[in-house]
Amino acid sequence: MPEAYRVSLAKIEAQEAEQAAANKAEQKARQEAVQAQIAAAVEAAITEERAMAAGKAAASAEGGNVAPNVDWGAVPSTDLTLIYPGQASFEWVQNGKQHGGARPLTKGGDSCMTCHAAELEAIGTKIVAGGDLEPTPIPGKRGTIDATIQAAHDANNLYVRIEWPDAGHHPAPFVEGGKMDPDNRIKVAMMIAGNDIEMGETTGCWSSCHADNAYMPFDPGAETIQGNAEVAGQLEAGKAITKYLSESRTKIEIRGRRGKAQGGWDKLKTPEEIDELLAAGTYLDLLRVFEDGTASNGYLLERRVVNDGEMAAEANLSAGVWTVVFSRPLNSGAPGDVPIEAGKTYTVGFAIHDDYAAARFHHVTLNTSLALSDETAQINAVAQ
Image: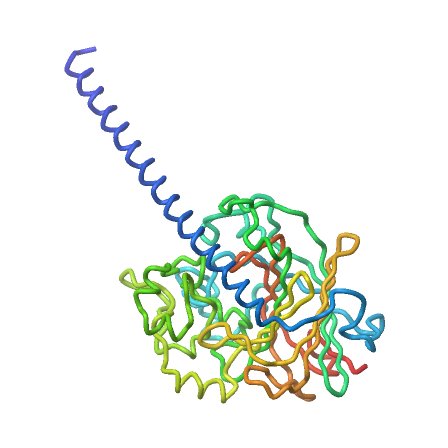
């Protein structure tokens, strides 16, 4: 082999090795940046959960104290599949470059269930395994949860019962101890869409999940949030942005053109405009139940808010199955509580945080309908 060739080959190999080392260092830096962002978001999520605990309504975790007069054996049940959504945000579902169903959703008026009802298992399984929509997968985490939901009502209250199988513990590798919310093995949320929410009937609670929420691709981070003191103060935000509705912002970036961050966390409307939206019923009613059976009643608009609405709940794990029961007045009159009336159909969504999960690491339903004594609704809350 000619000496000049050997010298040239050695030079090329050295350059390739140098480039490989640089690529490896760059990849490591990106991974460390993601891990740092996750660690900050985990801390923020846990801090928020503990802060909200102060507003939880007391409820019993034993027996049938929440719905003592409901005969659940006589109440019809609905089987729903909750999927793992990863980082699929409200912006993502509307962006044709990211989501093939964007046009049928935004232009054709199709709902999420119209296209995806038959492929929920495949969607959840694909996302949870890791990829574009899940940069930090949790080994062993399931892609879907099969839950059974029942609902009933009397003259004053709505009662909801949800059951699903436990799946054991699969530690999150990016959290010390593997538990994102060590105080809550499970959390259950039900959201009820109010008035005039963009695609509220077709997307359900997806309308509140944005690309700049905690753990999402455009999470601004604590430093940026605190650097915008006026918005941070109005949102009572610390290290992360909670879910919100697009109606509470002056602009939402959908496509992310020219490197723009998707979402609109800092494009907040004035407090007066937010109050007008609340008075008009433009919000997602939010009911939450925690592992110990305590509960939190609130709503989503410009941020997640705890209100003074009544609520009672209980939760227990028996023979490998979780059972959560909760109730709320049909019409409490509290700001942020959607009045539930006969003759109307409501779009609702359910979310389950299992295995000590927090923030976006949950499982959710697609758009689901609920009504009082109406067999045409997916969830028929029968009279008891």
